[in-house]
Length: 394
Ligand SMILES: Cc1ncc(COP(=O)(O)O)c(C=O)c1O
Image 1 (spheres, helix red, strand yellow):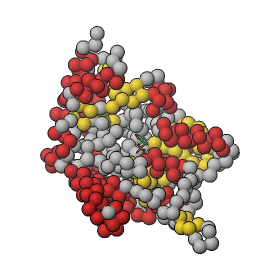
Image 2 (cartoon, rainbow, N blue to C red; image 1 turned 120 degrees about the vertical axis):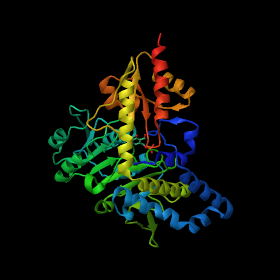
Image 3 (cartoon, rainbow, N blue to C red; image 1 turned 45 degrees about the vertical axis):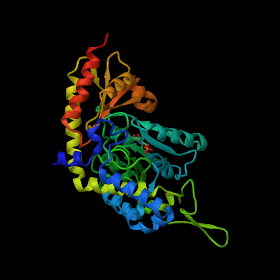
Image 4 (cartoon, protein in one colour; image 1 turned 180 degrees about the vertical axis):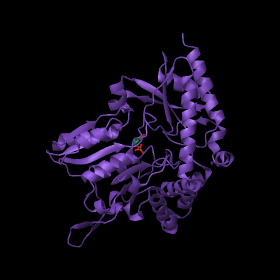
């Protein structure tokens, strides 16, 4: 069980806001903040390069922590600036041709979709969308039927930005493994929220971010690439960190996942990310997942009781993100009126989720995303605010 008093005491932000925008960026624990500020301080005292050298163990430890988090090896991990770059560095490394197909699902993330389409335009590869099943999650049977020899890659968003859905990643992994097709898993919203085990899931590439459910710093992300795939994937961008410049003028790309990184990096963030991962591992991801699931379920149930409020989440398994609509009120106005009560939520627009919201005719939604450190008081403040907004409709 989560020791709520302890985790709230570790989280200075809870004194100021009911933060229900954890799918955007969580409140970090003090330990993460101290690690970042401590390193920045050291850089200011002795110089950036010198501080990185002095504290090498701290930032190297982040690779061990991330590897432990997803049940992988440290040489399969790259630490980069965000989940989008992590995903891109792997995706653009797949060499697609005009006869290739790439499959994705309706939960696909806007930036991933744009990258998919760019590559499709350049190469002639086809992007096909696997339908949802009756629960609103990816239809694994339909995916199986679409997996012919010409499929080069399957892209799956584990937990989308725009809803509480948790896609059945391990079932998808079973099908892609059987077909011998690489599975690229966008775990940006699931990492830190629920258990992730790349062996159990059977994915080949996984991308994640620091600032969301891991409670790490902004401007941090990571990529995991299965060892056997690393040397097959030539990064779309190379520099002198990803590769060595040889005396004969040629270059040699490094053989670990750091080939997907670049030389200059945010060392303070990298250290802070490791501290955030350790904090989550110490609490226990299973325990976090249980609490997050319960909090979100009770929030959905309470919202559904309010006249004029429609909860929009669909899926056989639902996680931390709760999306809803207040009839006749623009989601932006809902967000702003809640902000006046120091309740943080965010707004999702169809342009972030065309394959999902677009297809369901949803123009926008309010997104309230819980984390384990939220308490009943936070949820009550949100619910009181939503009631007032719903009841004061003209
Ligand atoms: C599902 C999903 N994938 C990828 C991203 C991109 O993450 P980042 O902003 O760290 O690049 C997000 C961000 O909201 C997301 O929700």
